[in-house]
Image 1: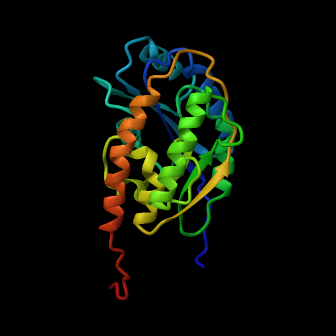
Image 2 (image 1 turned 90 degrees about the vertical axis):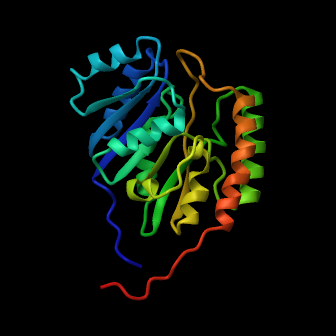
Length: 242
């Protein structure tokens, strides 16, 4: 097995829409969690209509590593994540939700799980998830069905806390809502994945921008699409490279 060196530089991508009260405390937590690493924090403002942009711009005076990318109109979480990854300076990227429910202190756990061949480490909230019973139940059902169909070896693909190779991510087929299928897509290209238990917290400010039923209906269509992509995948074995 080839030698693997854990990353010393990290880009953190946070997609947000109307999270004006959550940006300041979360940025402070991210910066504290990554003090030992060279890092940048990229907030992608996905068409917010509140004061999120103004809050972010004011925080740049305090955090020199904070970068802001703004969408003119909301394009959804997957597109916002992709925008952030494309603007990332470093080879490894961590993502987390902008509502404060993911704990940035868990990012070092994800980094510790990296080893040769691993291109994605995902958070697993199953033992600590603090959500309504309908969200927890729909998540369990969706994850169970998806896991059986796609065999992606991941108990919680809906967790926004992920760590992955920028190169591997940009090689994946892009479509809306693709962030929920990243483990299957990484495996499709030949990469390995790992899952790490992470904490989950209550949302303190604002409300969710995503409806449970909406995600379920879209997810069913996407599930069959990803299954089709898996069946069409071919992984060449390169025997000569000059």
